[in-house]
Length: 253
Image 1 (cartoon, rainbow, N blue to C red):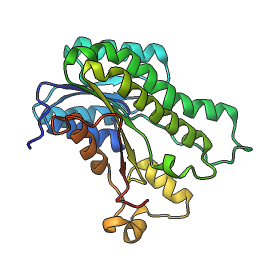
Image 2 (image 1 turned 90 degrees about the horizontal axis):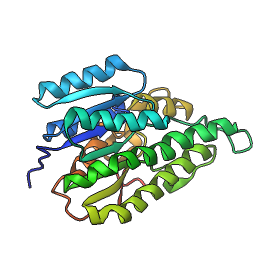
Image 3 (image 1 turned 45 degrees about the horizontal axis):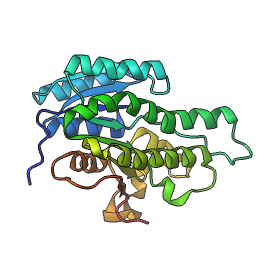
Image 4 (image 1 turned 135 degrees about the vertical axis):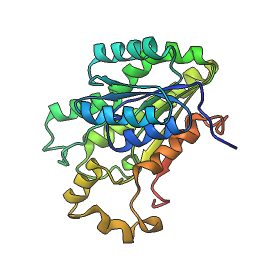
């Protein structure tokens, strides 16, 4: 089956680089118009917009911190005003925690990570859902992490936040299926991004490529692996999967 997203508009949060960028480009390649959200990196976001426009698709960059409720509401309103509709929401924006024990974790960090990974997707989804309900077929994807499989030590803020995000996804899946909205989860493992490189260094690996030999299929996951799962989930190739989670880890569980 040929995957086509012609006639659909997507919003990808945190889309100026890394996984978000790959998802935005993959959705556009499949035929969608794409709203590119970013927090600070305007230049990088505009590069993504230019790449999407070069494919013949409509694209625009939107600056908004996802942990600001008012900016989330404005973001959705602006995207719908500019594109005319919204039928795909990818909640991708994220930050890392500092790798401390619970004892040593600053409560402010805990709240900050929870706000970005759990509260923000709920708020953005809240403002997007009235528009998604009008689309006939609509999709929400939560970009989570395989961290929720392991709940490793020294990662409580991130582990908690991603677990909450997954709970949100499964709740929305049940609440909104009557309106034709599917809500699913894509959970990357260590991925070749700026954040992934920093995480590898924190674990004692100076060059993330050094992990290729010990990784499934002889390489560390790349952003395009995550993007491919997202495109399938939001397309007509997926008519029935809802409230599900796909782990992008090469089967390394």
